[in-house]
Image (tube, rainbow, N blue to C red; front, side, top):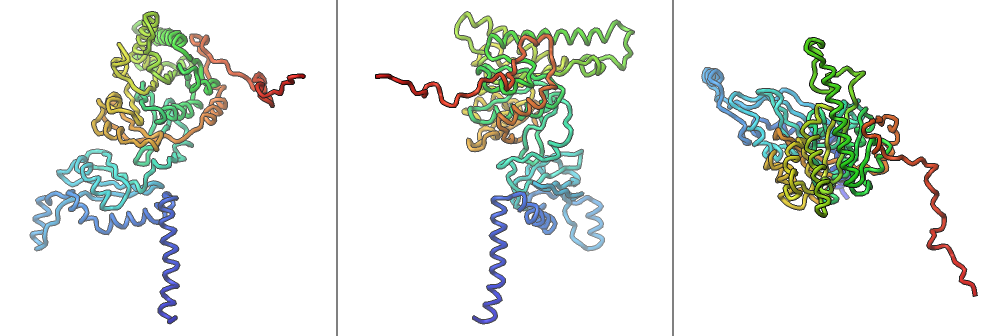
Length: 465
């Protein structure tokens, strides 16, 4: 074996090992691959061939008059104007590039070119957001962050704002928050095994350490929400209890409006700066605790087996509509989940749905269900929700009536983990007099009968002679 062959072998073996390691890291450890290889390569691609990429993607415009005159004076060809890079900021999942748009360009131009930029820079996805007129951020994502969801530690460790909960990760690598102050009422749709319950678990997990009253309505005999009992101020497990609980919440709402009215007093008794039309303007020492009502399956509250159940159903629907329309100012919020939510449920269904601003649609069984949740937000959002794969539970499309939407996926949380979280913060559960009759009983460990070592039906029986 000559010297040249030996040298080639000595170089090729380490190179093959490095290449194999890079391919393995890209498939199994995408964050590590992105931090060590993907990020430097992406920055190099952006810097190295920037002008050609901008021209090929249709992001150039005619040069300004003064630039054309200057080029003419120097006998140089005038270069077309294009967005200029104002800064880059790397993260564990991607890269944020800030652009200053050229004159005559708009944010929509970059939105239309996002797919072309993704291929040119060989990244997983490119998302565009406007910072202010003329300034746009491109959030480049290096890999599929929704394949294995890892919530950023800063979002979890940071002290959360009241009624603002990090519940999922967005496709652009940012955190998706459920903010009840911004979108008071929410609708969570999806088929069986699509991730609706996981969304609720993340909500409860995030709300448990906050000074908030949680009220549950779970007509599946409480199997979904009873494990949260230590942190629930009230729980209904059938239609009859649900009606009584909703009527009690309405009385609580009326009491709170009386409190706000009393604080306003007669004209002249309260200074103008202290006037308020909701609980958030009240002094902290008299402000009632906010309430979040979690409805597990909305269809169960609409069903009626016969005429005897019609009156109860109508009362339940009327109570829900009143809460959706009026309860925000009283600090009462609705989070409603269901497999379908359309006019076929009966009178009042579409009226109630129209009051639910926050929309989350998981995998659905039919196009009509997707339109129920996202049809009045965006046609693209409807299309995205119909493409969710069954092997991606927790994947959803979240939006609101402003037209903004994004793909999200909730992290997995076991029922035991959320139940333990509720037990840890059980001391924060407020006692509400109006809802006291529906406070779930929490069994102490000492009161739970021990499991027999031999099942009763397997105890040996002497048959005698």
